[in-house]
Length: 218
Image 1 (cartoon, rainbow, N blue to C red):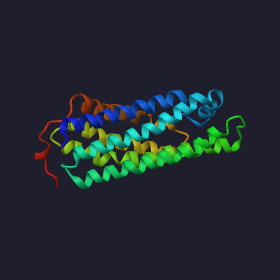
Image 2: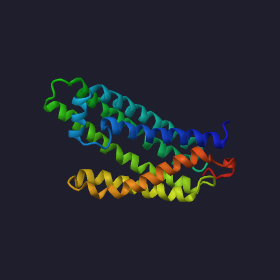
Image 3: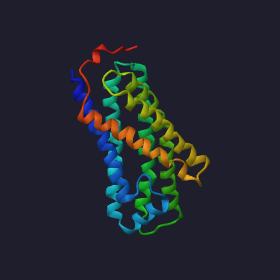
Image 4: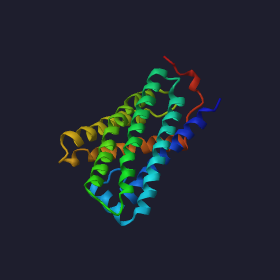
């Protein structure tokens, strides 16, 4: 069996890779936080670069799932049912994210004759990003709880992850209920940065202690 440190560093490496890939995809193609006009502008001005961002975004989804799997293996001894729950919520979110990329690929195919359908494709993609946040937010609750209850990851990170879950859900509800006020969810991005980047770096650099077997599994 792999050591605790190996599993922790596996999860941390893929979590950090997911974050970095998401940022790169957003920077070069606005695939992520970018609004529809920015996506269309990049798509028409530099379709080759947009394709690169598209691929990186898909790869980031794979990285996120692998990070979740590593966390599942690491935290399963704390409570296997809650570990399975956060794994399932992550998988649903990743599935929605990847499915939402399909209409974006259709938008790529329409380069050269941008039409109203192209904007519809991009809008569907943007909505899929928001929909995924319902699951990417709720997965943080069982994850944060298990991190808090574990004896080998700082409790502070567990608390931050739970707060991050609320912050992501604020984004989800704001996007659908108060779309004219995006500033509502902006403070939550700071929480997300410290919670998720902090967890990824701690796992990658510090690993976890080897006493995982002494933790309760009920």
